[in-house]
Image (cartoon, rainbow, N blue to C red; front, side, top):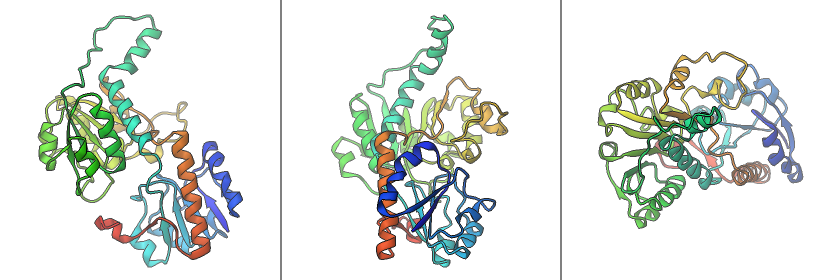
Length: 336
C-alpha cells in the first residue's frame, strides 16, 4: 500500500520508517499539502498529513480524483479537514486521538514557570553580564486560582501537575472529568472561569464554540492581569484582541505554543527572512509574551506514539477498510 506523507521532517521519518515493516510503501515529501503540491499524492491509496496541511474541499476533490481512499492525520486535531467534503467524496479520515498528554501538559507548565519567573529574559541578561533583578519579579503559584478550559486527557494531567503547586483548580468543559473532580477541581461556567482565574490555560479542541473564545468582547470578562496560556489550537485566541489586552493590561502575560496563522511560520527555519506577519511580529515585541513554535507535543514518547497509531490506522484500513481511529462529521457536533 503506497502512502504519501506530507510535511515531513527528519524526525518524522525516523519514527515513521517502521511502517516499512508493516508492508507500507512510504513516500516522504517535505512539502506541505496544498493545491500546488497535491499532485504528489497521485498513485497513492493513502496520504498522511500534519496540522498545517491544507485539506479543504478543493484539495480533497483532487485527492479523490487520484484514487486516494484514506487521509491519516498524525495529529489529534482535525480542524484543517473539511469533514463534510471528505464524507461526500467517500474519503476516510483517521487521526491520533491521544499520544502523550504528559508532553503537552508538561510543556504548558514549562511555559507558565518560564513566563512567570521571566526565565527567557533572565537567560539573555546573564549571558550579557547583566545580573540586575529589575523587571524579573514573579509571583508564587501557591494559592492562585488556576483555570483549565478543556479537561480531557491533557487538561487532567495538567490539573494533577498544578495541584503540586497548591493552586485552587477551576475547570470548564462540556463534560466533567472524574479524575479532575478527584483532584478537587470545581467546574464552572465560562464567564466564571474567566472572571476568577489568575492563570487561565486553554486546552480545548477547536470547534465553532471555542473559535476565538478570547476576543474583543470577551476580554472584559477576564480577571485583570491574568496569565493566559494557549497550547491547544491557535484560533482559540483572536491575536488582535490579545494584543489589545496586553496593551491595556487586561492580559498580564501571554504564553503561546500555537498561533492562528502559524501555517506560514511554524516548523520552518525563517531566521534569514523577514517576518511578513505583522500581528505575530507585534506579539514578539512584548516582554511579557513567550511563544514557542508548536513544540508542546515534541517528545520522544509522543512522536513514537504518533507514529505507531498512524501506522496502525493505515494498516487496519488496508486490512479491514476501517482505520482504528476514524474521524467523521459527527465530531463536528461533539459526538465523536
